[in-house]
Image (cartoon, rainbow, N blue to C red; front, side, top):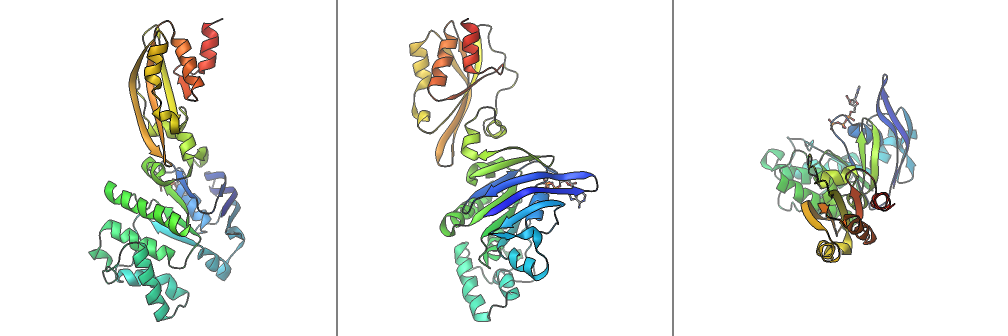
Amino acid sequence: MITIRDLRKVYGSFVALDTFNEEINAGEIFGVIGQSGAGKSTLIRCINRLETPTSGRVIVAGQDITALSGSDLRRARQQMGMIFQHFNLLSSRTAAENIAMPLEVMGYSRLRIKARVAELLSLVELEGKGDSYPAQLSGGQKQRVGIARALAADPKVLLSDEATSALDPQTTQSILSLLKKLNQQIGLTILLITHDMGVVKRICDRVAILEQGKVIERGRVVDLAAQPHSRLAQDFFPRLTGYQPRPDALLVTVAFRGEVANEPFMATLAQRFNVGANILNGAIETIGGQPVGQFQIELAGPERYLALDYLTQLNLAVEVQDGRTAAEQFVDSNP
Ligand SMILES: Nc1ncnc2c1ncn2[C@@H]1O[C@H](COP(=O)(O)OP(=O)(O)OP(=O)(O)O)[C@@H](O)[C@H]1O
């Protein structure tokens, strides 16, 4: 649905976005996460052509956005709805009138606008609020108006620029639920940028992590979360720092997903091997509809390497603190 090829944006000699490539599929929720200044807004502004890329191509629903100008570009932009952190509603217009704006630009009749606005108010669960002015609405309600306005022209893609950053945690959850519902109900493709890992965890199918204009990690959220060493996993499952294992012990991170989360592997370790297995830290989250978790454990005792080998055979991702894989540790300790 969105093809981004070698997209670059340079301001003077400063590279704000460095050769971004991605294929965002129809019906997908794709997140771009990064800290302030990472290049997220630059990316989204190059996609909707609020900025002109220095080089590269952006193809949305089969149309090369980077090759268009004038009225062709305006028409192509109608394929992309956009929502913003501060909602960008007109304070002098009611919710219904704000939602109607793109339809007015497109020359819809008053009757058609009325019907479409009613439909959109219902879609974003704001029935009865059409006559309210923005000042009379909560932050979450204002964002719902923003979403309805973004969807008015029935775009294929929704671009979300930190749409929940100004909202409290509970309202953030309700807006994310709404975005997920729209994604599932009308097959909306969503590209969202955020600095909040919680947003990625909650609704994104795939993610790219931007740092200083470059992608430093990308993949399916559930896959990255289940890899002990990924940036994403380290953020989802913060590790103990500064812990020194005992001399006869290994400090091990075990990551797992799906069915294996239900297996009592810790109990089995203690039964089968001459080891003490001490859980230092751990959590299980539901990501992409399946359990994903990580434990940090200390394995102590003469059979700690056998225990480690057993864990890797269970299809768990296992990482020992000194960076060697479980297999390397095992070989090194059994010459
Ligand atoms: N018009 C511009 N001229 C010069 N530099 C710019 C311009 N726009 C952005 N930049 C620089 O490009 C870098 C990326 O900015 P961008 O706004 O894309 O980051 P961001 O990840 O969206 O950050 P934030 O979350 O704070 O909005 C920053 O260092 C910024 O100062």
